Image 1 (cartoon, helix red, strand yellow):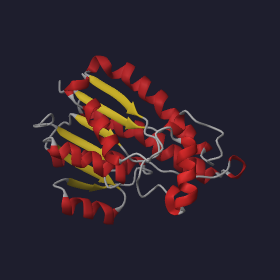
Image 2: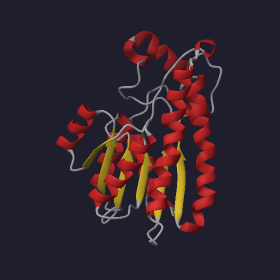
Image 3: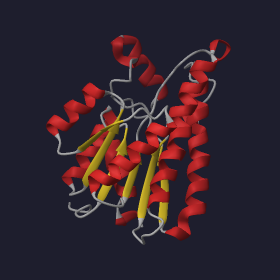
Length: 233
């Protein structure tokens, strides 16, 4: 398919498992991509194997995040058509052991940065009539709570992202901006430590996942790229 020929995209968390799969899918369909990530080594590896504009940025720092958007726009040569927000963290702690640091990390990366990066991208297109598709990455953790996964702060951040997406979609729709969200389940990425113990990991999957298997980053990328395309207009 060539749905994204002539389209420009920014992907945050681009060097992670889901982010890298999204980058690969966008490139395969013809997009030009600015890849943002705070992991310098992973980003260099991504740039080694994929033709991207690599932008190192730590989204915990809002000033740096906004600068990264500016750098991305300059690298791409103008306004963007697609913003995919795949940057995320998974700081786990039982509810009674959650610290301010745990809470802040989850909320600042998973929720706060998602808004301010999108805000910067939308603000930069004020003088253009280019359409814009934004896709945020939430989690099925937004719908599950109290399941013994020590994910209270993470789930709160991903639940907040659902509400944020609805609000952005409603407010920006008349400006030609579409905003959607994908909520993956358990996906096979480097963040997933579930299968470090294969026996207990399989037992967890069998008990919690109806299909009885872990998802693949490429499956998430397919859903995300559908929402970013004119097929989801």
